[in-house]
Image (cartoon, rainbow, N blue to C red; front, side, top):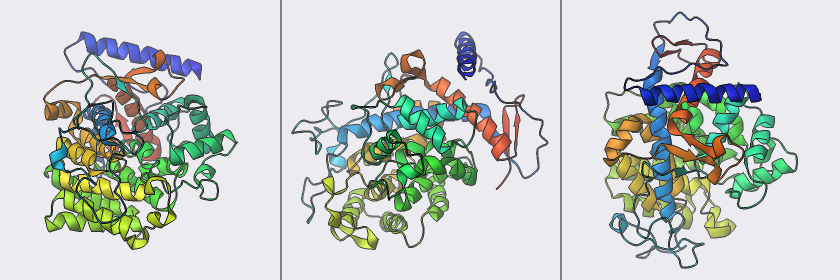
Length: 452
């Protein structure tokens, strides 16, 4: 396996030497450990360009980092006080650019990322740091390449977590991820680590922020994406937290199936309507989806919609969402449910605008870096790296430090979005050929994706 990793490094070095020395777009390198089979395209196949997708994956990583770090400024600042809403209980649009308030664990001290609520951006000569919204997905991508598989086993997930996550604090794990990791150290293997009998935190947000990338590994085929994501999701989640994660994975896959002639707003609404089928009709997660969408359709402000979410689910505990009655720490501010409802506010009201979606997500409350990172990554993928740069009218760093939060990677943990995107392309090559029974044409840089 070490030889495989060395081969990857050599090929990546050659690849990036070429693209930095030429002004012309470089050919996307083939996966050195995949035998590309001949394929006769069918008239019903969907064609997807690998080079375009490569740029989209860079946009995913870049926008995820922008949204993640911006959301961290307001993370857990506003979680609601159980009772009638008063001025100051939540942020509004008018708080953007104003002083950041302390989080629930801030001990009276605002975020050290920014003195005011604003975007946190890495200049070209700096490095993006990993966080829990990016680092586990990074691990999963590496594991898929290491084991040359499209579907990870529970043992492979466990070994990867134990190898790349610090055994002691600070290990940047919380709630269900932390519980699952401790269970792994005791010898349990996914999916047992997310079983409610073993993991009391199974309803928390963790699976959402660690598995969306599987949707990108199976473009236009959410059925394949969900197959790939099943164990990673069940590693930490069940029931509503699992269904919510499947909703996100489906949306990320559907980004390659949407009618791109539609306005961005209509594209996202179509994707969401398709993905909501992952939410059982009797679940509180489905009720949350329908409730937030109805509020959006009413034409009220996003602040009013967010306040309505708080009142309906944290005060009135409607639709079976009973977290408040359990008297959990911070009223379960890390729960999958309340953060899902909050994320839908930023999705619908952001209307496909990357900048506005991140702003609303950061101001909406609760675990605000997670929904921002999710939708930032999805919209950034749809726009591509250049589109993200245009949205902010500037250039950004393309480097990423996975060792800020994780351990055991090459080059002292310093990677690039180009490299990370290329690895994603290699994974998809294998998925298209072996999981979808489709084809890869390296000459035309095309995937042929059969329908489900």
